[in-house]
Amino acid sequence: MDRFDAMQAFARVVEAGSFTKAAETLHMSKTSVTQLVQQMEARLRVKLLNRTTRRVHVTADGAAFYDRVLRLLADLDDAEASLSGASASPSGRLRVDVPSPLARMILVPALPAFHARYPDIQIDMGVSDRLVDMIGENVDCVVRGGELTDQSLMARRVGDLQLRACAAPSYLERAGTPSHPRQLEDTHHRVVGFLWSRNGKTYPYAMRRGGESIDVQGRYVLAVDDGNAYLAAGLAGLGVLWLPDYMCRAHLASGELVSLFEDWRFEPMPLYVAYRPNRHVSTKLRVFIDWIAELMARHAPVADKRGS
Image 1 (cartoon, rainbow, N blue to C red):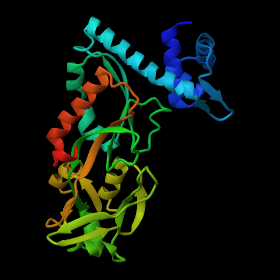
Image 2: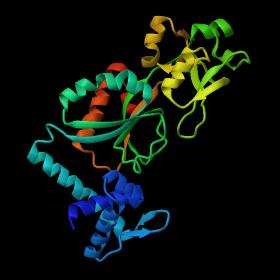
Image 3: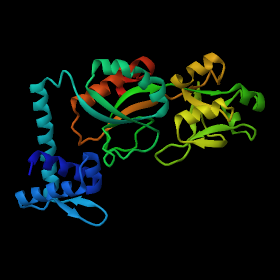
Image 4: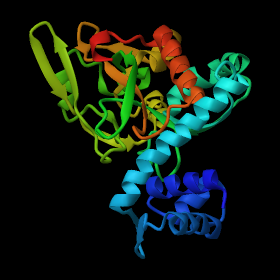
């Protein structure tokens, strides 16, 4: 039994709650993972996991051992980095998931500079606005807008997205240009709904002007759960949009969108990089998070450093 492989297998089973999922993320067979964990239990003469037909649960002894294993694996990574120079030139594969408009408009165009700086880092990028099972899918980090609801995650605030309301000229010609946000609640006006992944619902947008503050929900004929589709629906004239500046700037300049309610303001939407708290923050993950923070400082800087 290779004790390092066995510790890795055990840690992944605990995190995934399944031998099958652990095997998939380790690119091993389920039989191999099972054998490694069984051999470790035999060596230690301790039951580390309780298996049921649906899920694997860690025992009290297993939980204590898991904490030690994480520290050992992290120490090993650090030791290898200090001897090989990997800390100066991080390498390996990163699995990340980012919103589709952010990937298309900001992250992917900037990746050549990232790879010029870190040529040995391979990125597997999921592009979505969905709720990601970071443990089950073995994802290193996710980038998400809005307040984080999963308090079990560690997060770094890397930006604040400034929002504005806008609509296509074709929509305004058909429905008229609203002069006040409350008019979006009228029967003849429509918005494009955005379905948030945490519960599949749309939310009202808080707007303020001086001492006046309102929440605008609006009615929609289409709601989507993807940022690129949301923008496309607005450009097609299906309703009013609430967009971050980086998504609408070029379309406003070209006349494809028209800005509305210029004297009203929105609370900025925080942008976070989130990762698992029991995940050793490797050098490759750390430099990737730093790079995103550096990138967003140019496009959507954090407005209040105390909230970061």
